[in-house]
Figure 1: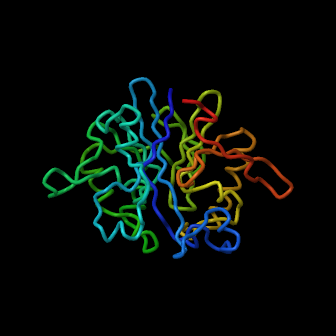
Figure 2 (figure 1 turned 180 degrees about the vertical axis):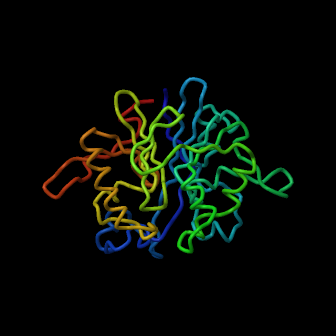
Length: 286
Protein backbone atom coordinates (compact mmCIF):
# COMPACT_ATOMS: atom_id res chain seq x y z
CA UNK A 1 0.00 0.00 0.00
CA UNK A 2 1.07 3.56 -0.74
CA UNK A 3 -0.61 6.72 0.55
CA UNK A 4 -0.28 10.05 -1.25
CA UNK A 5 -1.45 13.46 -0.01
CA UNK A 6 -3.58 15.11 -2.71
CA UNK A 7 -4.13 18.86 -2.50
CA UNK A 8 -7.33 20.11 -4.14
CA UNK A 9 -6.65 23.79 -3.39
CA UNK A 10 -7.13 26.34 -0.63
CA UNK A 11 -10.21 28.36 0.23
CA UNK A 12 -11.34 30.83 2.89
CA UNK A 13 -13.99 30.61 5.60
CA UNK A 14 -14.93 32.96 8.41
CA UNK A 15 -12.69 32.40 11.43
CA UNK A 16 -15.54 32.74 13.90
CA UNK A 17 -17.54 30.08 12.08
CA UNK A 18 -14.57 27.72 12.10
CA UNK A 19 -13.78 28.16 15.80
CA UNK A 20 -17.27 28.61 17.26
CA UNK A 21 -17.41 30.05 20.77
CA UNK A 22 -13.62 30.35 21.11
CA UNK A 23 -12.67 34.07 21.32
CA UNK A 24 -10.83 35.53 18.36
CA UNK A 25 -8.05 36.61 20.72
CA UNK A 26 -7.24 32.90 21.08
CA UNK A 27 -8.05 31.39 17.71
CA UNK A 28 -6.21 34.01 15.68
CA UNK A 29 -2.98 32.44 16.93
CA UNK A 30 -4.04 29.14 15.36
CA UNK A 31 -5.01 30.64 11.98
CA UNK A 32 -4.38 34.32 11.31
CA UNK A 33 -7.45 36.00 9.72
CA UNK A 34 -7.41 38.64 7.00
CA UNK A 35 -9.07 42.05 7.33
CA UNK A 36 -12.49 40.48 6.65
CA UNK A 37 -12.02 37.86 9.40
CA UNK A 38 -11.50 35.14 6.78
CA UNK A 39 -8.94 32.37 7.32
CA UNK A 40 -7.27 30.18 4.71
CA UNK A 41 -8.03 26.44 4.78
CA UNK A 42 -6.82 23.48 2.76
CA UNK A 43 -8.81 20.89 0.84
CA UNK A 44 -6.34 18.08 1.50
CA UNK A 45 -7.60 14.80 0.08
CA UNK A 46 -5.85 11.42 0.22
CA UNK A 47 -5.02 8.84 -2.44
CA UNK A 48 -4.51 5.21 -1.41
CA UNK A 49 -2.88 2.80 -3.86
CA UNK A 50 -3.47 -0.78 -2.79
CA UNK A 51 -2.85 -3.50 -5.35
CA UNK A 52 -5.09 -2.77 -8.33
CA UNK A 53 -7.23 -0.31 -6.36
CA UNK A 54 -6.73 3.44 -6.37
CA UNK A 55 -8.92 5.02 -3.69
CA UNK A 56 -9.52 8.76 -3.44
CA UNK A 57 -10.73 10.03 -0.07
CA UNK A 58 -12.82 13.19 -0.55
CA UNK A 59 -12.63 15.41 -3.63
CA UNK A 60 -12.66 19.09 -2.65
CA UNK A 61 -15.21 21.56 -4.03
CA UNK A 62 -14.77 20.82 -7.71
CA UNK A 63 -15.28 23.53 -10.31
CA UNK A 64 -18.87 23.29 -11.57
CA UNK A 65 -20.47 25.96 -9.37
CA UNK A 66 -20.89 29.51 -10.66
CA UNK A 67 -18.72 32.56 -10.03
CA UNK A 68 -21.07 33.89 -7.34
CA UNK A 69 -20.77 30.64 -5.37
CA UNK A 70 -16.98 30.53 -5.48
CA UNK A 71 -16.88 34.25 -4.67
CA UNK A 72 -17.92 33.34 -1.13
CA UNK A 73 -14.99 30.98 -0.65
CA UNK A 74 -12.05 32.80 -2.26
CA UNK A 75 -10.26 29.83 -3.84
CA UNK A 76 -6.53 30.49 -4.01
CA UNK A 77 -3.14 28.87 -4.37
CA UNK A 78 -1.53 26.71 -7.07
CA UNK A 79 -3.17 23.38 -6.24
CA UNK A 80 -6.09 21.57 -7.85
CA UNK A 81 -7.25 17.98 -7.78
CA UNK A 82 -6.28 17.32 -11.40
CA UNK A 83 -2.85 18.93 -11.05
CA UNK A 84 -2.14 16.92 -7.92
CA UNK A 85 -3.18 13.64 -9.54
CA UNK A 86 -1.11 14.43 -12.63
CA UNK A 87 1.95 15.21 -10.49
CA UNK A 88 1.61 11.72 -9.00
CA UNK A 89 1.31 10.12 -12.45
CA UNK A 90 -2.42 9.43 -12.23
CA UNK A 91 -5.60 10.50 -14.04
CA UNK A 92 -9.24 10.66 -12.95
CA UNK A 93 -9.95 7.58 -15.06
CA UNK A 94 -7.49 5.57 -12.93
CA UNK A 95 -9.52 6.01 -9.74
CA UNK A 96 -11.33 2.80 -8.76
CA UNK A 97 -13.03 4.06 -5.58
CA UNK A 98 -14.12 7.47 -4.30
CA UNK A 99 -14.69 7.43 -0.54
CA UNK A 100 -16.70 10.40 0.74
CA UNK A 101 -16.35 11.14 4.46
CA UNK A 102 -19.58 13.14 4.19
CA UNK A 103 -21.53 15.05 1.57
CA UNK A 104 -20.88 18.70 2.40
CA UNK A 105 -19.87 20.51 -0.77
CA UNK A 106 -16.23 21.09 0.20
CA UNK A 107 -15.77 17.32 0.58
CA UNK A 108 -17.77 15.96 -2.36
CA UNK A 109 -18.17 18.77 -4.91
CA UNK A 110 -15.37 17.40 -7.06
CA UNK A 111 -17.08 14.00 -7.33
CA UNK A 112 -19.52 15.28 -9.97
CA UNK A 113 -18.86 17.46 -13.02
CA UNK A 114 -20.73 18.99 -15.93
CA UNK A 115 -21.18 16.75 -18.97
CA UNK A 116 -19.65 17.82 -22.28
CA UNK A 117 -22.49 20.08 -23.44
CA UNK A 118 -23.24 21.33 -19.90
CA UNK A 119 -26.80 20.01 -20.14
CA UNK A 120 -26.44 17.89 -17.02
CA UNK A 121 -24.03 16.24 -14.61
CA UNK A 122 -21.89 13.11 -14.64
CA UNK A 123 -19.39 11.38 -12.34
CA UNK A 124 -15.97 13.03 -12.46
CA UNK A 125 -14.46 9.55 -11.94
CA UNK A 126 -16.17 7.37 -14.55
CA UNK A 127 -14.56 4.08 -13.49
CA UNK A 128 -14.97 4.46 -9.73
CA UNK A 129 -17.33 3.09 -7.13
CA UNK A 130 -18.56 5.91 -4.89
CA UNK A 131 -18.82 5.07 -1.18
CA UNK A 132 -21.11 6.66 1.41
CA UNK A 133 -23.41 5.15 4.06
CA UNK A 134 -27.17 4.89 4.20
CA UNK A 135 -27.62 6.94 7.39
CA UNK A 136 -25.65 9.88 6.07
CA UNK A 137 -27.13 9.62 2.57
CA UNK A 138 -30.66 9.94 3.89
CA UNK A 139 -29.59 12.85 6.10
CA UNK A 140 -28.10 14.61 3.07
CA UNK A 141 -30.93 14.12 0.57
CA UNK A 142 -33.47 15.31 3.14
CA UNK A 143 -31.44 18.20 4.55
CA UNK A 144 -32.26 20.12 7.70
CA UNK A 145 -32.37 23.94 7.46
CA UNK A 146 -28.99 24.23 9.19
CA UNK A 147 -27.15 22.16 6.56
CA UNK A 148 -29.23 22.78 3.44
CA UNK A 149 -26.66 25.19 1.99
CA UNK A 150 -23.93 22.54 2.38
CA UNK A 151 -25.86 19.61 0.85
CA UNK A 152 -26.16 20.61 -2.80
CA UNK A 153 -28.36 18.28 -4.84
CA UNK A 154 -26.14 18.63 -7.92
CA UNK A 155 -23.26 17.17 -5.91
CA UNK A 156 -25.23 14.26 -4.48
CA UNK A 157 -28.14 12.99 -6.59
CA UNK A 158 -26.09 12.37 -9.78
CA UNK A 159 -23.94 9.90 -7.81
CA UNK A 160 -26.94 7.66 -7.20
CA UNK A 161 -28.33 8.23 -10.71
CA UNK A 162 -25.02 7.02 -12.20
CA UNK A 163 -25.39 3.57 -10.65
CA UNK A 164 -21.91 3.88 -9.15
CA UNK A 165 -23.00 4.38 -5.52
CA UNK A 166 -22.43 1.80 -2.78
CA UNK A 167 -22.94 2.03 0.97
CA UNK A 168 -20.72 1.10 3.89
CA UNK A 169 -22.65 -1.00 6.42
CA UNK A 170 -22.86 1.44 9.32
CA UNK A 171 -25.49 0.86 12.01
CA UNK A 172 -24.01 2.91 14.83
CA UNK A 173 -21.12 5.25 15.55
CA UNK A 174 -17.62 4.00 16.41
CA UNK A 175 -15.14 1.80 14.54
CA UNK A 176 -16.33 -0.38 11.63
CA UNK A 177 -14.77 -2.75 9.11
CA UNK A 178 -15.38 -1.94 5.44
CA UNK A 179 -14.95 -3.54 1.99
CA UNK A 180 -12.04 -1.13 1.51
CA UNK A 181 -8.50 -1.66 2.87
CA UNK A 182 -9.18 0.37 6.00
CA UNK A 183 -11.63 0.72 8.87
CA UNK A 184 -13.83 3.76 9.44
CA UNK A 185 -14.60 5.58 12.66
CA UNK A 186 -18.10 7.05 12.54
CA UNK A 187 -19.08 10.27 14.35
CA UNK A 188 -22.26 12.36 14.25
CA UNK A 189 -21.58 15.68 15.98
CA UNK A 190 -20.64 17.60 12.84
CA UNK A 191 -23.20 15.84 10.66
CA UNK A 192 -24.96 12.48 10.87
CA UNK A 193 -22.66 9.46 10.35
CA UNK A 194 -19.52 11.18 9.12
CA UNK A 195 -16.84 8.54 8.37
CA UNK A 196 -13.15 8.87 9.23
CA UNK A 197 -10.83 6.34 7.53
CA UNK A 198 -8.29 4.69 9.86
CA UNK A 199 -5.53 3.09 7.79
CA UNK A 200 -2.71 0.73 8.84
CA UNK A 201 0.33 2.11 7.03
CA UNK A 202 4.04 1.51 7.51
CA UNK A 203 3.58 0.31 11.06
CA UNK A 204 1.38 3.24 12.08
CA UNK A 205 -2.34 4.00 12.17
CA UNK A 206 -3.22 7.02 10.05
CA UNK A 207 -6.59 8.65 10.82
CA UNK A 208 -8.11 10.91 8.16
CA UNK A 209 -9.76 13.50 10.37
CA UNK A 210 -12.22 15.18 7.96
CA UNK A 211 -14.37 17.58 10.04
CA UNK A 212 -14.04 16.00 13.48
CA UNK A 213 -10.65 17.75 13.71
CA UNK A 214 -10.36 20.05 10.68
CA UNK A 215 -6.94 21.31 11.79
CA UNK A 216 -4.34 20.97 14.52
CA UNK A 217 -5.91 24.02 16.13
CA UNK A 218 -9.15 22.13 16.77
CA UNK A 219 -7.73 19.53 19.16
CA UNK A 220 -8.76 21.22 22.46
CA UNK A 221 -12.27 19.97 23.30
CA UNK A 222 -14.13 23.33 23.32
CA UNK A 223 -12.65 24.32 19.95
CA UNK A 224 -15.68 23.18 17.95
CA UNK A 225 -16.87 24.64 14.68
CA UNK A 226 -20.08 26.67 14.59
CA UNK A 227 -20.97 24.52 11.57
CA UNK A 228 -21.41 21.44 13.78
CA UNK A 229 -25.06 20.42 14.17
CA UNK A 230 -24.52 18.89 17.64
CA UNK A 231 -21.56 20.66 19.26
CA UNK A 232 -21.88 18.92 22.64
CA UNK A 233 -21.80 15.57 20.88
CA UNK A 234 -18.74 16.69 18.93
CA UNK A 235 -16.95 17.43 22.21
CA UNK A 236 -17.80 13.97 23.52
CA UNK A 237 -16.70 12.33 20.27
CA UNK A 238 -13.47 14.30 20.22
CA UNK A 239 -12.66 13.23 23.77
CA UNK A 240 -13.32 9.56 22.99
CA UNK A 241 -11.40 9.64 19.74
CA UNK A 242 -8.43 11.56 21.13
CA UNK A 243 -8.08 9.09 24.00
CA UNK A 244 -7.94 6.29 21.44
CA UNK A 245 -5.50 8.29 19.30
CA UNK A 246 -3.20 8.88 22.28
CA UNK A 247 -3.35 5.27 23.45
CA UNK A 248 -2.69 3.78 20.02
CA UNK A 249 -0.37 6.57 18.80
CA UNK A 250 -2.44 7.52 15.78
CA UNK A 251 -1.01 9.85 13.17
CA UNK A 252 -3.74 12.42 12.47
CA UNK A 253 -4.16 13.53 8.85
CA UNK A 254 -5.69 17.02 8.75
CA UNK A 255 -7.96 17.70 5.79
CA UNK A 256 -8.33 21.46 6.31
CA UNK A 257 -5.20 22.58 8.14
CA UNK A 258 -3.66 25.21 5.81
CA UNK A 259 -0.07 24.30 6.80
CA UNK A 260 0.20 20.97 8.59
CA UNK A 261 -0.37 17.61 6.90
CA UNK A 262 -0.10 15.49 10.04
CA UNK A 263 -0.12 15.70 13.83
CA UNK A 264 0.20 13.58 16.94
CA UNK A 265 -1.26 14.06 20.42
CA UNK A 266 -0.10 13.50 23.99
CA UNK A 267 -1.62 13.43 27.45
CA UNK A 268 -0.92 16.49 29.63
CA UNK A 269 -2.16 17.84 32.97
CA UNK A 270 -4.78 19.78 31.01
CA UNK A 271 -5.91 16.73 29.03
CA UNK A 272 -4.93 15.60 25.56
CA UNK A 273 -3.12 18.23 23.55
CA UNK A 274 -1.20 18.52 20.32
CA UNK A 275 2.22 16.89 20.59
CA UNK A 276 3.75 17.81 17.26
CA UNK A 277 2.97 18.52 13.61
CA UNK A 278 4.71 17.11 10.56
CA UNK A 279 4.73 17.16 6.81
CA UNK A 280 3.69 13.86 5.27
CA UNK A 281 7.21 13.22 3.96
CA UNK A 282 8.75 13.74 7.41
CA UNK A 283 6.83 10.75 8.75
CA UNK A 284 6.44 8.47 5.74
CA UNK A 285 8.97 9.65 3.15
CA UNK A 286 8.24 9.80 -0.54
